[in-house]
Image (cartoon, rainbow, N blue to C red; front, side, top):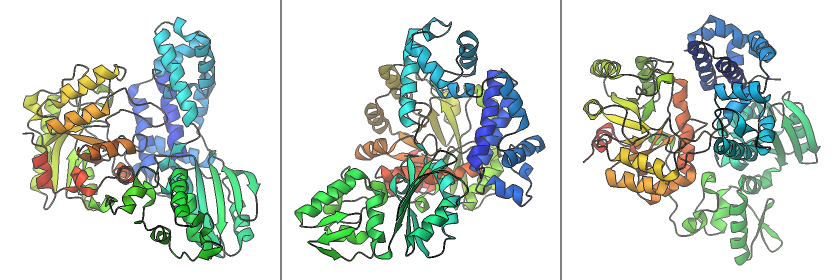
Length: 573
């Protein structure tokens, strides 16, 4: 069974969770979290690095001790210290920390007072109204926990797009080795770049379906074959991810690719349009009566239907067909349109790489600017900066800029929006910066009205530029806080502010519908990586996928503009 980077990161994070529950030294907890973040962001499988005897300690946040533990995970799937911890605490206990309102202290309390060690135990206890009697909980929190558990149950089958990519990469590489295999494409929600994926739909072009399916069933990560037919094989990987492999003939590949890319609603709308034109469309092709129309490229299906080509990201039946009919489809943003990243952290707070390393990597990515936005003092758990440290960092950035040619480091901060709507630093400090990303990290549980008022009040500050991760959600882990996004966007437009599309794989916040709303309201977006190391800067491409699903064009995104124009936009009038 191959151990993926996400598997290694999960084990390290599990150790950190157990240490938190045991109230261990916070620096020890952070070391595991940092190592997990580094492994998760590696461009290559850590198993390959170990196989080629590369030095893991060369990567930020990984010392010799953690490197040895990572090697043990790759070799055995776990490590001895974690197994020892599991003898003191139930294996499932950290799973409680993914539930809203439950941190390490409450998880331990639930276990000690009520013997609750798993989400299932917690659901039973909440339904039986037993949680409210435990000190520190109460009826309101009990109901909120139950609501969060039910929401998680609906999402559990879907995994992050980034995790699906990690599972798909070695599988497609394996399938490419099959003889008589021509093209291999991941279709479905993966190709539409949805933020979560329920399963993998893999289409293979082959003249020998049985041979291709035989090869597929030999993949070492397959745990179970659910069904097998002449051209279709359904399987489950060791990770629990379902895979549908469909083998298509060369002359039917493009029609099948279109059909299985979906979405269902988009396909139904196209079929209805085809019916009005006396055409029949299905997974096998497009027909005029009994005669099949030859389709050599996917875009021909749209041409036959007298439509502009609709890219996969827009195939959701949310107005794209009408826009294609009227030549009004957006010219969607692409990764190469991005000129800089506006939200990254360094080792000055909770990042793993220093200022110079982050700048050097941004230059390698072809950017012309990079905003350094370390945490403000409110976020103590992330070693947030006080005024003295921030001003020292500004001096360092000025000195670095003096040595750079054709590249500018922007002086920024991720400043907390406090519960009363004020910002974590005084204006006298904020005005010295080039830009400010303003975010909520605490007090998520305010009412919708109060949370909205809090953000709007913050936006009225003349030094508010970008609203960071605007809804605070963590996909499959924490629901968005209650907020009126339409009012927030109206306030942003009025005050000359912008909203962030945070490209962290478990955030992707804003979602695609909110991006579309911002576009329609003429509110510009910053697509930023929120990177905490150099590898994390690559996540920006996931933000671009989300922006494309939200119909965003380059002009809708502020970091497609030149540095001079961007800085001008950061100056409120």
